[in-house]
Length: 266
Image (spheres, one colour):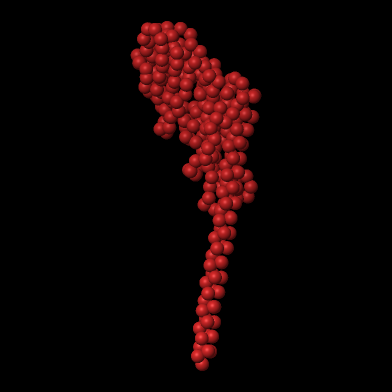
């Protein structure tokens, strides 16, 4: 009886051990499969986000028709394959193009700047709320006296640098460029540099070096890649410089990085 009892105990212990080993192996296999699937989803999402960025660049370049428009792309959800999508979105400031390639100074006026929204989508609204104009000069002290945008004088006064100017909302409602016709000073000025911070109605802002002339026309593209049935996403953001005066050969991505924010609108 003693031997039989010992054999029974040993058998039971062996069965428990095997059960634990099988359960552990099963958990390991399941976790490995889940991890493998997650990595595959992450890779797919990354490729989809990349597709969103490069599709936008293609759209901008194919619609580039100066001086009417510097090109544009659409926002929102795009299906690539069944269950595979990218969604593009941005703040108003990210969608603001400021073409600085033709800016010049004559007497007391700076002119030649052009602005445009980089999307043909209605949402979000791309509307200027105010400007902060910072300028440097040599010789006699000059002050800002007026700003004209789109053929309308939006502000007049007598402001030193940096000049915080309320321009009573200028909406960019089409993909056509709009001229900042004139930034005027109170007298002839020996201007050495000027930056403008464009503050939008959604609270976002963009600061651009506007004088002297530079070959810049930068906007931002954000794209989230996602696969249905998974909560995994990847979002990429790219600052693209259209560089309009040498567009054919030198337009380029200036900054390209991943952000930990899923684009859910528009």
